[in-house]
Structures are given as structure tokens and as C-alpha cells.
Image 1: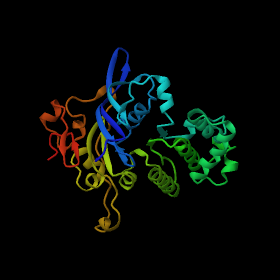
Image 2: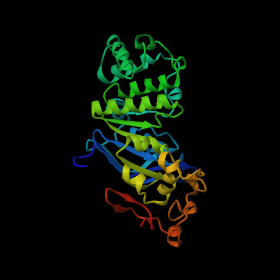
Image 3: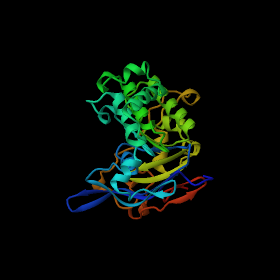
Image 4: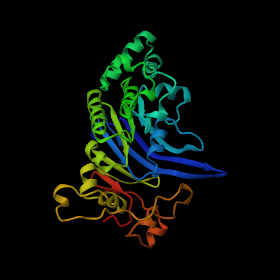
Length: 325
């Protein structure tokens, strides 16, 4: 990255408090995103992707809390900002597209009002002006008849339309950083493609950095220049997207890539059973000693059972594995 990153995350730790104990749900996660860049974060459910995003935007709720590390936006540390200052930052400089818009949107407020609030709170617009701009915001995300849709409540909209409303809210004040948490979950393929094209076009036009969180590797390969792979709260590999999918280094990344279905020329050799990674992601309270992937890893040895691997620098990235080579 030639210039200073827009977002810099260093050794982020997120703790889960249970009784008198604190467990590191996310540990030593570091990455950076430049202006206009889309960075992918992948992994199975329960690997810590969503809580990482919530920590960045200051929306973690008890029993989760940030236990250490630094988060910088434009070089300024924001992790320890007072709540009032973080509220001013949230929506104006950092916005988030949540995984499920039906639960993120206010069910008793028209969607136009929810968009207009962004202009009133962050830009000091009058309600009349804000409501006019809400119509423009819906039009910008390709909602048909936006002058009528602003009066609709969330339950009156389809899943794709609700997701567009979420994007309109997230992009209303031209944020510098957009966190997209599974932005196409439960949408049909056609709507998924439209939503991704919309995020790509708006990010390019406004120069926003995007953190794209997903377990859909095809989506990540299509959208992201660089990819971070999370497992059990650790960033186990970070590489350029092309290298992640053509020559993965970590056994977990290899398993994810191998689980992709074969299409086109790759499938001509006959029917093949989809491959899977044996086992499940361990609970936060039951992370194994050593490498957290060792119970599921076909290459695990004695050192994997006892020693947590340190990050090894690779061309264009890093990997956490004793046997990556």
C-alpha cells in the first residue's frame, strides 16, 4: 500500500466475559485498508468476522468488549474515543451495512425518515431538506418510485429493497469507511449481483474504503483485491485475492478453497463430491492449546498442539502456520 492506509487495525483483541473469566474471542488481528480499496474478511460462522466489524464501529455490547489493540482512521486513534464522539463519527465517517436489515431498521418508522435522520444528525439539515435528500438517496441505490417508497415501513419492502435502504443509510453522508457484513445474505442471485455492483460503483465514485465480510468465497474473489482469512478469532492468512485462491498457504484456507464447487473446464473430468473440512469451529471457551486449527488440521504435528504459530511474512501478506511451506 503506497500511501498511508485509511483504516489501520493493530493487534485487536475482543474479550468475552463469562462469570469471572475473560476469554479472547478475537486475538491479535491486524490489517489495513486504503482509500478506494475493498478488503475481504472470510471464514466460517463463529470465526469472529462480525464482532470485529462491530468493534471497529464501536457497537460491541456486553459481555463482549475490546480488550486491547489500536484502531486508526486517517491516522487518528479512534478506539478510545468517548461515546459522544464515537456517535458523531458513526454514520458520518464510518458506516455499516448490517447482515439482516429487517432487524437493523426501525420497524415503526418510515424508511425515508430513517434516511433523513442521517442528514439531520450529521449535517445539520432541516427536516424538509433531509426528506428531499432521502428521496435522492433511495434513487441513488436504484429503488423504483423513491418519492413513494420513502413513506413505506420496512415490512412493506422486499428483502432486496430493505437491503438497498440499508445501503442508502450507510452511504448517505459519504463515509470514508464502509463495513459490509454479509450484504447479500438471503437475497436471490439477481438481486445479489445488483447489490454488489451498487457497492462497487458507489465506492469507486466516492473513494470509500470497504471491509467486505462474508463466508461466500465467490463473492470475495469477485469484489476484493486482498483477503484476510479468520479462524477461531485469529487472522490465519492474509494475501492478495488472486494468490489466496490460486495458491493458499494455510491448511484452513486450503480447505475453504477446496470446498468450492468445480465449474466449467474444471468439472469436465466427471462428477466429484464436494469436499468439506472435518469438525466444527470451537467455542470461545474451548479454544485448543497451540494452533487453534489443530483439531481439524490434517497436517497437525506435536508443535501444533503446544505452540501458537507466529505470523510468517510472505510476498504480499502473511500466514500463521508451522507447516505453511
